Amino acid sequence: GVSEVLKDRKGFSVSLVVESSSNMAENEKMLKKGLFSLIDSLKGGLQAGSLITFRDNDKTISKFTLNKTELRNGIEKIEFNGKSNTKALYSAVDKAITESLSIVAKKAIVVFTSVNIEKEDAELVKLINYAKNNDIPIFIADFRPKGENKILSGLSKETNGKYFVVAKEKSFYNLHRLISEEVIGQNSYLLYYKSPISDLLWDKDWVSLKISGGPKGFSAFSDFSYLIPEGGGAKSGLARKLLEAELSKAKAQERAEYLKKIEERRKEAKEILKKTAEEEKPKEEKKEEPKEEEEAHKEEEPKEEGGGGH
Image (cartoon, rainbow, N blue to C red; front, side, top):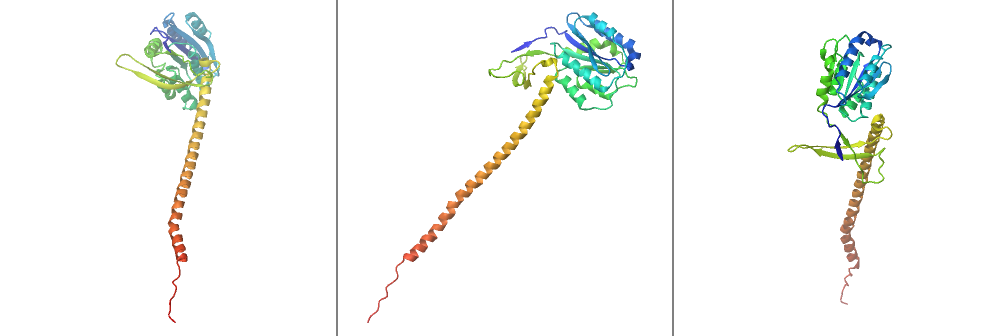
């Protein structure tokens, strides 16, 4: 069955991912002002927030809550020191995506950072796909003084978020409006499936669904398969690990089936050649038979008796 779980168009969840390295210390006042502005703009009972910080590693300060005071207290306690890096940033955003999947709501992530990413790598691509596949826009407030970072800008663009350099744009203080405009079109559904197969294991088996629907005069459908993870489900990264393993297994199986088909065709061709050869053999023997009979007649032909007078 399919059940719509988002009844209120104004409801959404936002994950705040904040860099807490010493590089952000000089921007502490402006950063906290922007964070407080966003939290105060959240609509009571409808919009939730969470707080994750990172420098050398990530840390969840506050899980998703409707309590604005809890979020404000978490922000107040952030201490800015130490160094950060690209790996820590990716890990924090990955964690924000995973944690947001544990609740049913429209979703958005806002990253506040000064990390300079110099080149795109496999981890970034994986992160972008993780966000895109779950329809989660990533907004990035770049606190670097050197201007736009194309990699961070691309991360926001690819996920339908927005990137801006804090020193140049006032959009930093309009985050709530920007997020609301982006997530209002998100549609979330709770899907569940009961298999007619009694021995189907929910923790490691693929389940296929075909969903169709739409208003009068218009329709759309999606035909897909997905893997239900064991254990923590959407609250952990296990789903992706199982999916990657399953895809790898599927590729190996596909290759094996391909080689099997090639071998079957080779055997089939061999059988055809053998059969053709056997069919041709009797024809050759039949062509030789008349010659053998002719020779036999010659041998059996009686000799003429000579006659003479005395």
